[in-house]
Image (cartoon, rainbow, N blue to C red; front, side):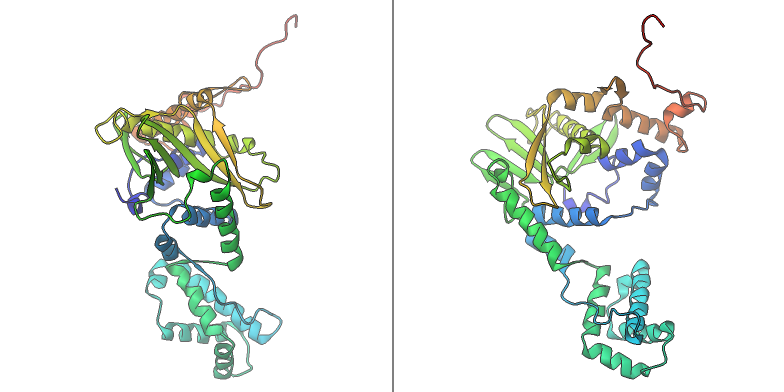
Length: 364
């Protein structure tokens, strides 16, 4: 199945369950196509880096472009800066309107925006056509044209690209994890070394408890001789000292490992090229630093941790639901079509029950 169809395909995914675990209404918004996701700079960089690592060069170029031009007028104390600022606001509004930005391209559209910006800025001098001519002369049209390309492609800075490229080189040259990566991803998104196949962002469809599900793990290492499958996920981190363990619970990485493991357990039980293969009971995460340029580290999630992440377990004497519990809770909400509260709240008749202490001290 084509990877390009993954995000459009209707099926239960790890990201859907992660949103559901935060609040049922977040999952309902995803199902209805109304989810509003605020992308941070770190998330945007992570997405770009993900594409650089696992897309072909052509795919990356179709998604990202290094910005070649800059706004020539940034001093808003001057009339020229007021004009450029107004123009940028208009372009942002245009891009926010999908219907408008999808058809934007023509030079006359830019000319209209220039005129609107002059009016909106409230300036009186220089005269409109003189100011626009000067703006074009110093590269303003090139900047504006490139700015509007954001309707079809994501613009990144040269600094962002250089940083991502350096991180990629560090991964490939690392003596511990370098063999997992390649400099140039082939169109097949897989490489074969002897009898070991490495697949990048393998699009998986599977059925669990009668429900269509999907997964898109970063790296799948398949040893066709031993018939063992090892799943790996690549993470960026801003940790200065490789203290990445706290990220597991904060960002739900344990659930991600559990979901991907379940996905392969399902497909190895059904007819297909991987039928009869064994899924490694442990899961690997590779963390690459985005701040200090530290060497990447590989974290192996133990067999017990993966089992608990799937079926549930206790952490600090507190029960934590496994991904199967979350999945079944999600199905309960779908079947009952209620989304204002978590299932536990409904089943406890609108009451949250505390679970603060482990036990009572003896003799008290």
